[in-house]
Image (tube, rainbow, N blue to C red):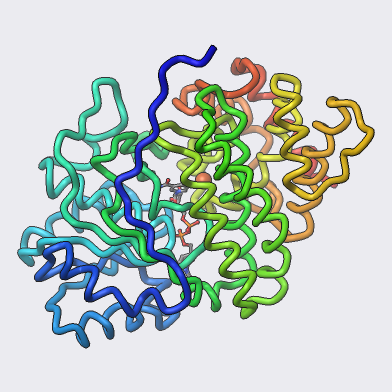
Length: 391
Ligand SMILES: NC(=O)c1ccc[n+]([C@@H]2O[C@H](COP(=O)([O-])OP(=O)(O)OC[C@H]3O[C@@H](n4cnc5c(N)ncnc54)[C@H](O)[C@@H]3O)[C@@H](O)[C@H]2O)c1
Ligand SMILES: [Fe+2]
């Protein structure tokens, strides 16, 4: 029988086309008088920042902007943002962008509320985060990480060449998630594909991991159905509002599947390897997801058969083993259809396998994977991922 489990999420989720128009009211309701808008150069370049600053100005709210976030944000950027927060005498944070900007926003909040450097708050037992982050609104412009509702932030440590997790406590959760799919209409196809596959990976890993429990299972399964229905269309037709809305919801649902826990081997691999080569998190996670599932399905055959069903596969009349394999095939097929780059195209080399296996094994997300893992297992999975890229 399962042990005692809890599920906690401190975030109000407000979503729909035009949700961004309610930003000033939401900020004021949280008591913000001078929020810090945290975003990245890509968002500025895409001309999206006005989507946040215009409603704030219209609502008569004063604000400051920190737009120095980069993809896979490093410790130094978070600490710099926290300095700006203090210097500008801000009283709240608005994270605007993909996972990188939202994670930085939440992490700036951690440092603002708890002091020191974000490096002091790497996840550990006992939990180093003591104080809740200041009022924070997260507004996603990608549909993937779901950072707007997760209790995590992922930060790069350039010295150790790894990415580490901060969170696992409600104290880091955004106070409000404003999810407006209109903001994702201009996402380039490659970013749509990578981030959408990340949402799928969250759902599949959380659904099959040892921490699974009924409530997040339900959001995970629906996230898989939404990705199966909407990702190809969003990739092929960027301005398709229905597909974009479906993917925004898929990201939110997939991320809710985390609860207070983390993911599995695919994330252990992509997160640790993401500190070795600075590549898009979603693309790297997508690349290892199929090989990880191929390795894992032996441990949870019934759950993998259910995943096949959620992904739209016809499993009638199949044995549970054949049905479980269909889930693996479906993910491999989707990965190719949305043109996820290979490991080789992302700049990885086979000589790196021993190191990649070692750091994946050291990642805390290895615990809870549906099949027992050793360093040798990771070597095998990395080899398989390279093999696929060689075709
Ligand atoms: N907190 C969590 O629970 C969690 C979960 C998974 C991943 N992550 C982390 O999130 C980060 C990845 O986030 P991501 O995949 O959303 O990508 P990202 O935030 O790194 O953004 C990728 C690129 O897309 C651009 N972009 C974003 N939205 C755009 C838009 N609407 N139009 C045009 N360009 C746009 C950005 O400027 C950036 O250059 C990684 O660091 C990853 O480790 C966090
Ligand atoms: Fe992810």
